[in-house]
Image (cartoon, rainbow, N blue to C red; front, side, top):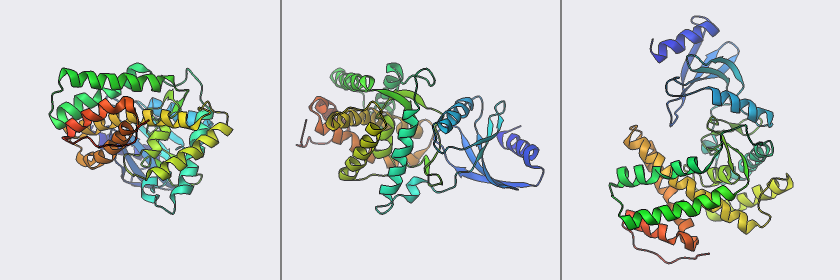
Length: 330
């Protein structure tokens, strides 16, 4: 049987023949698919995760972990791990990306900050995979392998490779020195739903135990929606104040915390550029190409601000055939 036939057989066993309708609910950058099912009792979401490509078990485990932390995640109503299907409660169809605007942003991000702090307060070692040096570096290597080599078609010279490796080591040293908490890993506007209680949190199956600023970067240096730096700074300060009150191990000096946030952001932005290039060149998904300029703008601004990253900025200039520009540095 193909995946559609397997899905329909499973839904028929659950709801009865002719007693349900289903339609695509959302797209995913992975091999997972989501469908919204209408049946007696309301609407539900089915996750279709082909077992040879995806493993449902991390989703099940993290859903329970985050629910225990007191945040709003889908309830798992039925499992079919052998065939790779989960029946989930429906958190609605309105994402933060659809709802965010200058009037709504403050309240929505306040809720997102509150939920993030709850997740982080519940953190403990030994439960989730470690966001260790090997994983962080593997993510960084997506940039030369996919963005540089495949997307720009440029072969780096030995001196350019040395610049990139030096920047990677600087970022890794900072990232690995940060306090460690549960990390959603894609805590952004496409994975947060406007719901009651707010937000509903999705796509957490890749959660790890790692740097405390990572999810904050995902939220405020979002690849899919950009805000001016004044707003970003305000929302990050509000998170930092809430995190301190909750007893989280954030830096007591905000400038030190913000530097951690920015350098963690550079790691994520480098990774995301590599992922978006891979999604296009390997998987034929071109929808992410339009989001690359915003991600690159985040990375360039960080490189402009910190003198240790000026060599990386020079390399980005070379890759994009730009002239260097003067700016403030720290």
